[in-house]
Image (cartoon, rainbow, N blue to C red; front, side, top):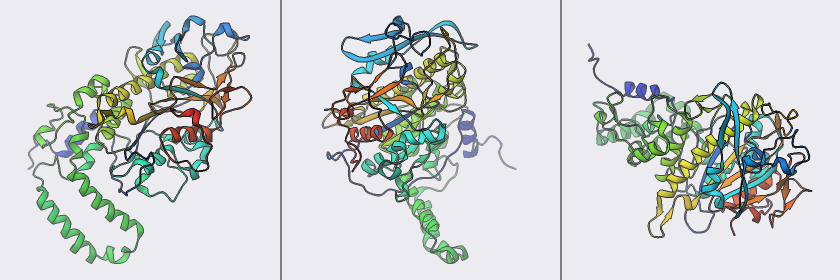
Length: 497
């Protein structure tokens, strides 16, 4: 009869699940690639999904009511709710709104705290999209409308350029169209997205034995695996039947890569769970990541009884970048609500798409949400040295891209403070990076319609007569990352210098 007091690895997994995790297993292979930027160092891409239509005119390109001839009927703001700067063209909305039943009338949801800190590395660009379908538009926000560089995603391009020596170059914790791979079937699977729906559990997948009471030691496991690979498998009837299958070849390759991942000790470097009586990881030979306490300061809910999925994604993203596991990480809120925080709700139902019911409150709440996550990631990367010789931090080599699927309608019922909006092709993007043309607004907004317009790709000068296309936006972000973009438009206005 078994000892019921034994805390085995299955119960350890259950403890993680109780903290809000699911499961995702598997590791990608690694293939050497040359760096694109020319300095022999990787650059890092952090994609944060503005899921459901993060509107640029409700954040950093707002219209002041005093400037509009249609102030009562378009999405604009009282002058005292827009913060401006003498040294920056970027504006910030400090909205005052209500979102019943979570927070009442006249609740301030400011965004200026973010521009106060980061405006000199912020780049606001306008965009005319091509779809108002969530999944399609999200994917097009990553692929330049689906046609840039044979349909590769920005994450795949970053992994191809800088993923050499990184075990999982391209990690994706989002959902929907933000999770989809690109259309280029020629890309090695190594550089496609490694989906991680459960950030808390993922570190446990980097070892087949660690955390198992009574598991054989590494030397014994090596002997057993060698015997399996060289003697048992080759003589099995299954191997004799399917030995020429590409899928079997890939499976065997991944098993070998898994052994190298174990040797790197990633399970302990990435595990952001504290040792406790409920989850006694130390009793099973596991260790919490050294950065855990700092991560808890930045993302407090990773240690809370009610876990926060987006904070968990952000915490793992920080560790993946810091430990040089990945060069592209994607995180995003999803459809499900998350309660808690100063407004009683962190993520609205459908995230930004709650704008269908209450546009102003959903936009203000969700912009605060994704910006606070970005702030935590930027702080962590700014404190983490990348190159001891030069003093560069990881943030010095990173770019954050807020990928919105589409914009929202620009009109409102006359004088309304609470109203709903539909999807709209017209919008813009926010990029924050030392590599971008910071402290810049590229394009503009018509104060009488709320519609954004484009800019000259070379100079950045606003041009009311043109629209910024998805392929131009893709090219500008990729070029800011130092990625070769071939015949795509050159967009010097979007990169530093």
